[in-house]
Length: 314
Image (cartoon, rainbow, N blue to C red; front, top):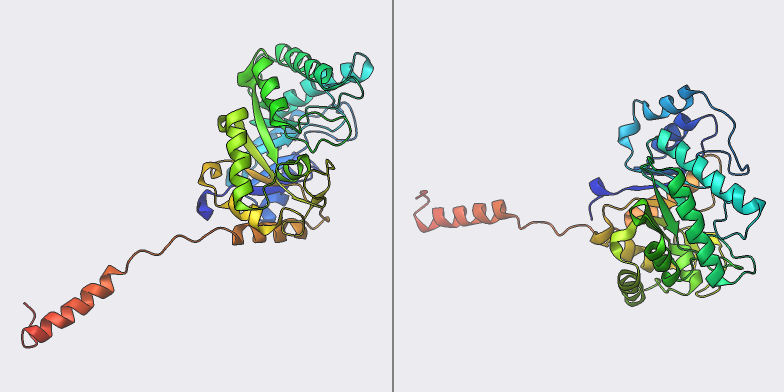
């Protein structure tokens, strides 16, 4: 993997407008970015003028960033039982897809949801029905829905590769979907990527159960909690239970060179933590072996030829 192909950034604030997020990302040296498309603490957005979208889509430096993706609001729960929360979740996801489309974003990440006591089987069924409803209501939307792997905290669904595979197999329009893998969630769910052997097994299993063709985004987060703890606690790169060894595997995996990699680690307003985490990640990339220096050998051979011919070049 070479740095010129690297797509690496972090979740970035849209405070002040979508275009401000582009400025923040570029100032921090990102080559990819993730944003919320609206206030994450509200079900539905306030009306926005067209200029708020065009200032983003026509930003003069937008092309300096690789893929820009969205993350759906955390209030959305496609696994919710019948009732107002479920209705709001479906409508909110439809609305966020429409906003993402206006911003020409290729992906919007969602957590599959929490069954809140219904049980995993019913929760999975509810997710599939909700997603089918959303897709049917947004037939012209090109932005795909990326199902994120979860830590398995509480009653959340998506902590098993089997959960994600079942959703993709049973939705009516699978081409509208993709998968986002979160590294901290993987470890917390019991998938050990903290060493090379474990890493290879985890992604081999992912390929067998889900299929690497579905993988469209990586969330790079270390984990404050140990393997199999089923808690969602993000940590800075190299400071958690995944450690640098696990991230070294990811950063040198040529299968994922074209996939954007997004940090969701804790940060301050200046985003210095993101900059430091990116420095650590890029520092893990193995440098390509230098090519043989043919020019020097040729010069040495030439000097030898002169001596063999009495100092005259042949």
